[in-house]
Image 1 (spheres, rainbow, N blue to C red):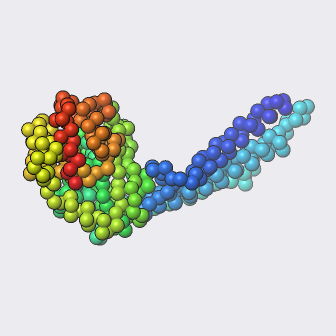
Image 2 (tube, rainbow, N blue to C red):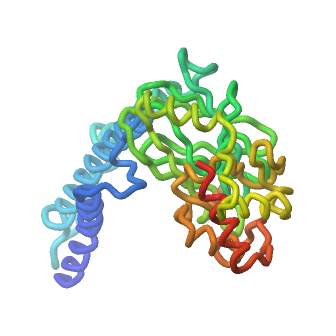
Length: 342
Ligand code: CUA
């Protein structure tokens, strides 16, 4: 009998241990890049507040369960040889009321802030002075457009700090989900419909995003970055993106690469303003201003770009980009051209 009690005591404390582990895991000093516990926007702050409130209630419930368990085992349990007492539990009105109204009250305390947060985020129209961003999800990369400008970019979204960002979400194919943990909650991107999301980022920096809905072979390779800029940085970025592509000086490797690009199948899928009008893959007009390529899974440097063009499918299973068979100096020149497109 004693051995059985000892086992029960251990299993009753296991949830407490798990909760402590979770709390300690959240207390590490350096924030990982996709940390929802280090909110950097008003929207992310609301969700974080909700998390703290719900966790506090969870710990309160855990405390009650542990106390009830300890009382049941050590105080109210029947000892060997003891006669069974008549049950009074089902006739005690106060106890019945407590375990009916208690959970209902806790559910109410959790649902009120949850519903309040949902309504705060669900605006019928863009907030005043907001920057509108149009997001188009593709298998497996993200396209970003800025309505009212000619800017079309991929996988790296630039936004200014302290200004409402009104994000419209569309998909070119299947269901995806837009998620930047430090800047707010997920929003599904659904065929045939435009969903919205809005937030005000409060700290300049680089934040990681990730498609959060399984969308095929390379779902895990469908990442992106959000750069929260100061208003000055954002204005400079915007001005550069609206300008045409850099023209390489004649005789350089980049100039040779420009000619290779113009006569290659690349033009069927990729746009470079004034050069090509492809619309299946990312716009490359200012590709060299991005820090990453291929759905933000690789660095944007000559080595990675070369590896990517040589064999896209090996690096991103299922990618629509074909292997073009470019090799040697041809490939080097093409890479030099692309890396010149600031
Ligand atoms: Cu797109 Cu998962």
